[in-house]
Image (cartoon, rainbow, N blue to C red; front, side, top):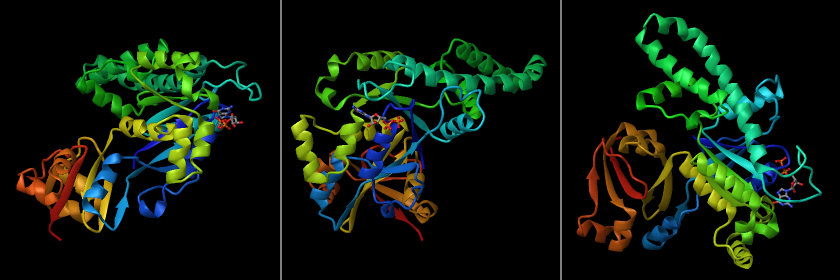
Length: 365
Ligand code: GDP
């Protein structure tokens, strides 16, 4: 399963946020594919469409879909040079598929900032630089290997050498791999390098609990947004402290609390949705009388592969996917209504599953 790693300098609010994640946490019994590990938190993906489908179908049970966050602790500064803990930090990042970078945007004189004052841009640069230096090392090693073959005009080596030198130049300018423009062909080479700075990133601006309502006036948030804009990355503003309080409440209590705060959606819910997108994930639904359920698939999956997420038998014996889009189903009022209107399609093995599809798989056992 794909996972997003939570990184950040010490004292920015990572543990507070991660505690909120595990508190709010999903019951792992429902999600046997999820990892059981103290550093992994399973979150359910909030999706109003699931509530609507439940109203329509009135099933015995409704199950949201889920995915994982990984808490990446460890020493940051000097990690690229470091042995032990620093290396561990980097190798944990290597294992995740996207990065949620938590940045301190709250003022609190009682909580020491590792480098003196609150300065989100410098914080971001500190971490990014460690990742860039580690990638530079990877790339330089690789250059040594292929340079000779490239000079002998070995075709693959020439292609790879081009990519490597482009990356090296970017790293020497302290720019991450994701900022380097590459052709589709070159992207393939990039993938084989497993670099840290080619992973997608979003920034989590952690503001003080009393600042949630006037985020617009928070100059730290503005700085983070500007930096993110340049990188075409997203920013989610949260107050980790508030999230850890919200996480202790259930359904109705939570809604009342949010209303009191004057916010529509908790920061954690926003973060979950944004991270889901960042990981390239999307949702299809199954809707039967027993169970209405959301399933996570990776964008670009074809119907048999998506069916395999429910059960390997579904993939192996795949015949077809009876599919209706969520919007068509809701507009028709019922599955039968959708059938009468001709909105239920019979899709074959080459069908690219779309976010919001409601699917009934037919398969041979
Ligand atoms: P980590 O080192 O990044 O894991 O940071 P922690 O989550 O341990 O937070 C460091 C300190 O900052 C703790 O004392 C938290 O209670 C505090 N903290 C975290 N988020 C907030 C916040 O939104 N507002 C305030 N005032 N303090 C916070």
